[in-house]
Image (cartoon, rainbow, N blue to C red; front, side):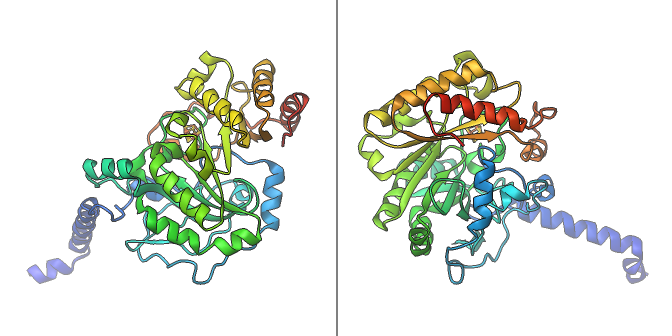
Amino acid sequence: MAKARAKSPRSAKAAKKRANKKAAKTSQRARPGRAAKPGKSAKRAKSAKRPHAAKPAKAMKRAAVAKAALPSKGAGVAAKTKPAAPVKAPAAPSAAASYKPLKAPKHRGIGLEAASPFEMRVNLAKDLPETDVQTALDSGDMGFLHSFTTGSTVDGPGVRVVVWTTGCQWRCRYCHNPDTWTMRNGYPVSVAQAAEELRKYTQGLKVMSGGVTVSGGEPLMQHRFVLKLLKAAKGMGVHTTIETNGYLGDRLTDADFDSIDLVMLGLKKWDPEGHMELTGQKIGPTLALARRLAARKRPIWVRFVLVPNLTDDLDDIKKIAEFAAGLGVVERVEVLPFHQMGRFKWKELGLRYEMADVQPPSAALVERVRGAFQAAGLTAY
Ligand code: SF4
């Protein structure tokens, strides 16, 4: 009878429930270095926003053209285990189309590659002991990465491999990638592994006048790792860029600037109180980094996220423009229209999202803001 009961639909259902529960426990015990299985919310997450903000429309068009170029076959090893299940990009095919994913690097059987940087990833280093995290940060021999993407045409000159780091000390109200705020959401990856993966793309990057861009999150949260990777890239003859909020610029020595061919610097708001309200941090360190770069004639691309009723005050924008123009090293300004692609991440992470009712800026407003930068003598897109 017991056997008969075991075969009944009711008992079978109970057995299935027990099996699922066991699998969930196993997942939670994932060892350091292995991808912890994503939580239910992460599994629901399909894709979304990329670190920082939207990309200029012209750049999007360029992306479609540049389907090109980087080697794909043999460029990496297919992942045996999927880290996080994210994957569907809701509404922004144009942005996702800016990335041409290639084979992923293999990290302990886990793929680092993201189909686009709009995937949400969480808890990938959740179980790594704190001492290991600290050792990694101190030595720079290991870093924490959200993902690698390849074939980007919107993250610096030419076609780029982009290394998305985790960890950010800012809390921008419009952030499209709050999953990159927490370092432990990223994969632990050795600098040797990251450099080796990059090496596979060097020929293609050179042909496409591209290079490697380290973005985030905030890359300078892991400045030693980032510098080691950029130095390795320079050794391969690859152009290097970091995209940063600049807040930790004092972690970079003047000699470190030699490893960085271009700094893409986010300038978000001029008014100090407004900046604090928008990002949770002071603007001073960002401006200090900009001045240091200018003093050493290092090129900067400024990125400005345009959010209606939040960053669209023209007087404030003119002050940013005057500052940027006065540096004498700003090669271009990119006005990035706000969008809602990262909204689902806030929800999945249980964060309060204040921008739900904010619409993207109109084309006319974007043009006005570009005009404000151009009036200061800058090239703006
Ligand atoms: S600086 Fe940090 S919080 Fe702000 S947009 Fe970038 S990743 Fe998000």
